[in-house]
Length: 151
Image (cartoon, rainbow, N blue to C red; front, side, top):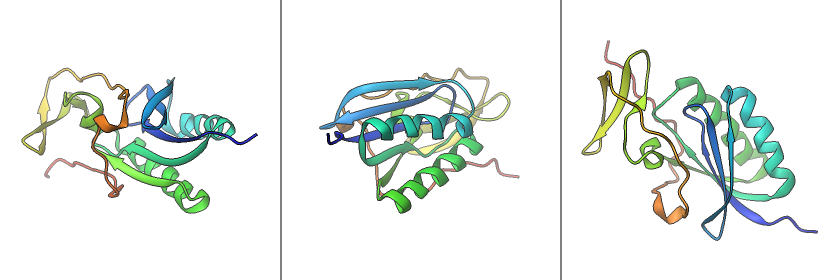
């Protein structure tokens, strides 16, 4: 029996990691996993590959946890090369209604008028998977979005 072809959205820039399976741009399955990205990503991806044929992955490319961004990018880029799964990137703010995203210590990433800055002592927004892929803006630029403090 042939596995259904789907798209995967991965939000791994904070914990818990969220994964959405989409068929015809509509969310058909959600997976939420606590833990380190390095532990969660291979296990969840393996489970998904057993059930589905993944056509493309849209991942939250940042800002957020630098290590999670690096690991996710390398993992998904490897899958693109090894398995021919198209990799797209999306700004992390696409998945939390443009609320602050936790950075380091008491700092949070904030996006206003297309510019990302760091602010202190805010409350991070919760991440969620869109019901339809048409709700988010993604691009072929899958390069990680690292925002570093000026020294």
